[in-house]
Amino acid sequence: MIRTRFSIQSTEMKTEPRETLFRVANLAQAHMAIHAAEESGLFPLLLSPPNTPAFMGTPWWLAMMRSLRTESVAFADILNCGSSAGHAVAALGHGQKQILFSDRSPQTKAVHLLAASLGAQVHSFLPVSCDLTGCVTLEQARKALGTLT
Image (cartoon, rainbow, N blue to C red; front, side, top):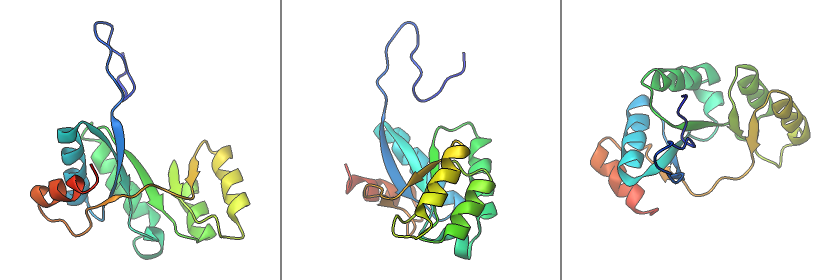
């Protein structure tokens, strides 16, 4: 049986954990987010810093997420492309399945159509995130999470 975050075991019914958005800028922060979420019974959604493709590049984000996935931890990720249609299209072309893209861009419709054709999701608005970009310890991550819950 392939287990996903939505799976139900035959002997017991589990409720789906609440999703919480964590803004992370490196692998250590992503680990902290996943650990803090698991401790709190939450499902982590990892969000890149604003306009990440412009200064770090989509391949950097994808490599970081690939590294996390080799550890068999449950999470989802969203790449923040800001209002750059070029970066959004490149991210989708590289296989990114969820992006944050401004709905104020003149190319919004084209980006949404491309995403739909690739089975990807475009978010134009996300709830408040737990910003871990300044955190260097798990205790700081727990404290930041405490401000949301």
